[in-house]
Length: 157
Image 1 (cartoon, one colour):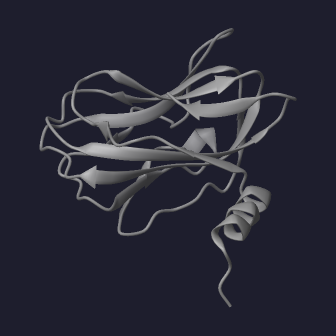
Image 2 (tube, one colour; image 1 turned 90 degrees about the horizontal axis):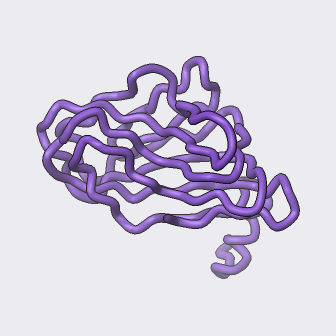
Image 3 (cartoon, one colour; image 1 turned 120 degrees about the vertical axis):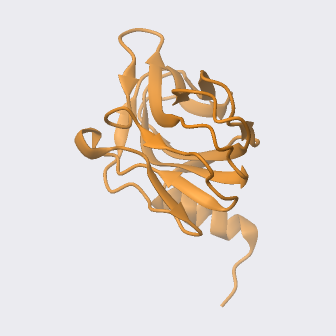
């Protein structure tokens, strides 16, 4: 059986939360890339995924997600120093487990993993931190969330 797009979107919204996508974001540069803004209150993150849209360069760099709340301390959402991304192919996925203690980004070519454990974030930003300049490439990021406070939402930065 096939369903129309609005029905499919509602099924995902009910089971996974609201989805927000970024445009492809350049992977080069040793910097923090702001991906999403968390606005108006706390949100529960049910899934956080990146899809490589353009081959990542050969420069050695590690990446990890973090949150920079407007009140409070930054939190590394992917445990440790991160995961190496040099030479990752288009169509590859980066994802997290959701468990902070073992939450290093997971890379897979052609298929991605989903979070096993949701986590909650405060208003502020969610970003990807690059430890060095990988030289080239782009990644499109997607986040699924459930508002925990009335009026809370997440938007692409």
